[in-house]
Length: 317
Ligand SMILES: NC(=O)c1cnc(N)c2cc(Br)sc12
Image (cartoon, rainbow, N blue to C red):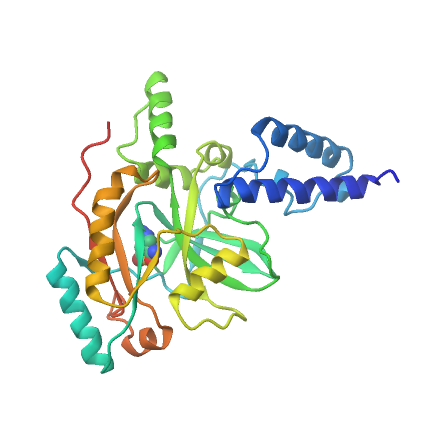
């Protein structure tokens, strides 16, 4: 039986959302670009002819159209923390000894790559993206909701209709950075010094069409407001982020000893230049959340995590 217009639109929205998830979140394209674009144009035509069926979470609603004079301020109810940096194995051992002394027992750590981008916070209500914000000073950030919607790896709708807030890094892949600077050089524009500056300049664009053109991506890594989720450790939290539809970094590893942590760090000293995104270190966190709560925070940073920093990579070619 012939589909109604509403059914056709819903079917296209569902297909395009699934295809975009596979491509931008899982890095596993299921259709080629030409077929995706063909369906996308069909959906734009149908939604334009029948706006009553256009929903705010349709894939067509990501494209920037807003040009702002500035960014509204956002207060982070749950402040974004910063990390204490360490630069040697000896400092990591000292960190582990402080942790064990405070807790009175040994712990497992989770190692995650430290992405060289711009920290963002994403707020969802009933599973819908309602706010995107920059870190700012950790307490006051900028409202970049329009620009966040143009970042294809940021889900407009989660797989569960829940209220949560998550944090992560918005970054520009190395290949996109090189392409962007080549284009800017041809146009006689200043080039960006590194992918981090390019990502920051792109997500903080007043014209969200420009943001949409910059091929930004994300890795989410913190459940700030867990909402209804019951999670006991960071490894589980990352699995929940995956299940909800977020893009997380798959290089993470749970390590039961500092020697395993150091082996992970050394392995990425070598692999770092092969990654399609820039990293500036490894974040080492106590994995268990009850241990994290017991360790708490200093004025600016958690006592349950440190950032091991790599030496700066050679200059951008
Ligand atoms: N995986 C993580 O926790 C992580 C990754 N990349 C980063 N730039 C940061 C910064 C903080 Br603060 S945490 C973190």
